[in-house]
Image 1 (tube, rainbow, N blue to C red):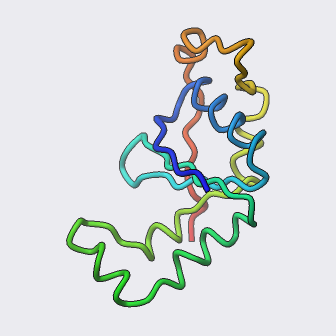
Image 2: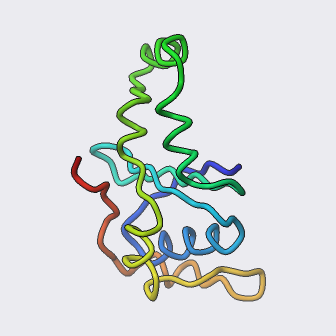
Length: 119
């Protein structure tokens, strides 16, 4: 599993997500409420398991993170899956490799932000 905190809104962000997606078969995005940050969660198991795993944590788990301002149930509701983010990112970024990674040019062009579907 991979968790990475990324800053969205540029072609570099799109390229980072597409690169992670090229390595991991299942990738979900967790936009941080009120911020430009997105946590990328990648796994070799189904991405739906990420949402299900967050939603099924017990009361002790929720209580453990609450003092830090983390609402696990809210995070589970904000998970954005491929069907919603890939159409926005495909064609706006590229898979980065050791041979070609033009980070500077990808970070200057703004693209729309990823948002969860309304409940």
